[in-house]
Image (cartoon, rainbow, N blue to C red; front, side, top):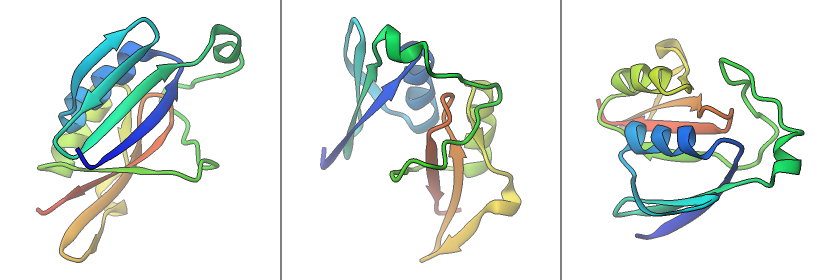
Length: 125
């Protein structure tokens, strides 16, 4: 592992499934209120916010993009199109193919996880 990040979440289990199934992270530790997901290159800790904070967070379906956050996690996937379908089945959303761009021979596309956190997917397609 070369990097780590922490995401504070309202709903732990759907967020865990999203990152496990969309980008292939594996749960290495799960306890009441948090979960550690890993790959060979990154560790992401999902931490459930306290109930008082969770009560102030309103989530929409489909998730509303949280554009006022200064961090965006990016993940390599085999196929953005396949990931688009997977994300939708898990409560997230990847932007339409018309929003994709290529830089350095890599296709990029943004989206959101089930709680509206902006993510980016990258693929050599």
